[in-house]
Length: 356
Image 1 (cartoon, rainbow, N blue to C red):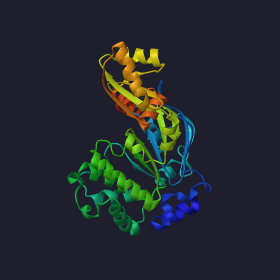
Image 2: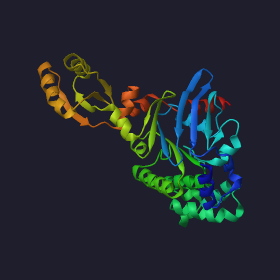
Image 3: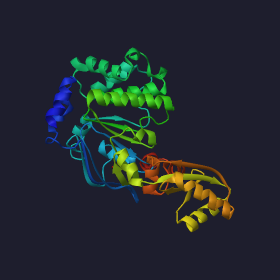
Image 4: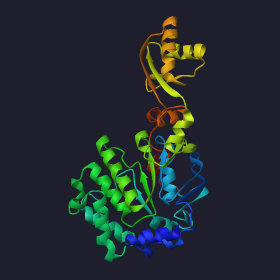
């Protein structure tokens, strides 16, 4: 890994100041996490997670607000000190080698962090100073990353005049400016409209193809998780499933059936009594899983007509990441979002300050 990494960085015009010489032996993971925990007083925000992210991989953390996604990223980026366990990023320990980790990563926060009264170019130059990019190479890197995210013609424009999507693209460009080993994206498209979200993902995919950057992202959008090479589903501080999107959907196997009825409680009892199926109300519909859902629906209508339960509508879908999430957690991600609030880490930061 070190040879490939140093060669890639050299090609991009950024060398020794980024501290990449300490990356461990060939083939080592870009991110290696073992038994990582974070406690805020009596609250266990992250409860012993284990995973590895390969160099060049796009790895996704999928879960609702409060699941532990941002807290985990905080620990990996040295912003939050772990309570237990260990982690390395780019070969560096996140506790003992914090400065080297920080020079090896790019980070796009969930909340905007640009200076709106500076131009796009000025924001990037300030970042280059902070990360020790050699001044002789700043112009080259600045032009390259602005071109990559489609903002080359906006270099002299003040950020206050940018749309939300343009600001997010500039933040991604800033995260790439110093040629990081790993780019962390914490909810990179939150608050953006669907068209802009698709545009952001086009840029993320193009930067991976052109720069070979390892990408670690968090999201609660199922469609975005499909872009990842592998996904870890995190719920209540624990990883409950991990694999490629295809593997995770195959692990569910059954179709999801959602019915709207005039008697949800009666429908749930009837499904249990007559078909042996467990059902619950999710997103306003009686929801359950069954093999060959299309063939099952006529039997459902027949039995419900017999027992006097009206069916207003029915929908059948093949396994999706929504179904994977529900299979492993007992709820859909939208229901989990509706029942939650801000992440525990963010709430505690606001009320008591960052614990370290």
